[in-house]
Amino acid sequence: MKVFRPSVSLIAVLFGTFFGGMTACAQPVDGGEPATPAQQTQRTQQAQPAEQAQKTQQPQLPRVQPATMESVFPAYSYKNLNTAAGGPATIDLATYIGKTPLALYYWIPGHARSDEVLKQVQSLVAAAGGPDKLTLIAVTLPKPGLEASVVQTRATEHGVTVPVLDDSEFRIGQQLRVQSVPNLTLIDGKGMLRLSNGASLKQVIGYKLTVEAAVQRLAESGKLGTYGFLDYYAAVEELVGQPAPDFKAPLISTSVEQRWSSMIQKEKVNLLIFWSVDCPHCRKTMPQISEWFKGNGTGFNVVSAAFVKNDAVRTKTKEYCEANSFSFPTLVDSDQKVAALYSVTSTPTILVVRGDGVIDSVLLTTDDSFPTKMREIRERLM
Image (cartoon, one colour):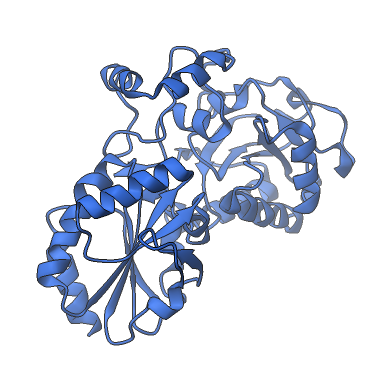
């Protein structure tokens, strides 16, 4: 399964920055775990010459040790990229660490899910008493196309009223082991690191305790138990029970634009599969799903949406679909816009959609039990 929770190399891909001695790869090994040195070496050998040239031109960033839970978070000074909101040009975290509860939010401006959750966190902190109770500071890593001026503009457009730290050396990112966004970190009133990798306010971190409740508790008391670096969270599951968001996308085969809602078949169980031709697990499972559908597709309507970031990937995806004689239509998800609409952060992700357009359930991967699961779902919904 291609899960966006690998080593720091994924953030390198997201921001267009590469770390010395590390291959930037957006396809972690099966299971989403960090690649081994041997696997990284193999990927390096398989990389395209243009990609290799790009890597040699990228600056190498200094290594920083990860912060330790239940220890005082290391404080440094950073440029503030959101001075239009009224803050100082430079933010010294020592001003806050150990003096007030602090929430750090790692943000990629323009990333739909990241933008959305920042707004939610900002509203939550304001409702909890604002800076008098809990200080919220956003953090980002500028890159070509996302320079400081662009960050400032997008912060203004999104109504961001808190400082946005310039983490150009990815110091905070490494301290907090940032592997994906959204990413919320909570530091208590004594400066102790208590929680990191919060991806959603609805994310459950303990017995009936959510990230939202943890933020409220920290604001009220300045204290919080230690919850550590949270596990990967699939925000797409929050859509279960809701109408499937509608969208338009072209078919990979003909480039003719289709509307998702018109592809839903009321008398069948509908499957919307998000995948990528560059995902090793997808390359293994998509042909299997196609063969399963050919022999067991009664009562099912399958549509796939493939991540396509450029013309080269589009051609590669089309050729792959044709070579495997896919038995279902494939839509082009340019720049993962549809995936962002569904908060999809791993591939393959399969959404089960009822005939009335409501999302019934989500499968985050496939295995040998896939046919059995599909049979059970069909019996339950039809």
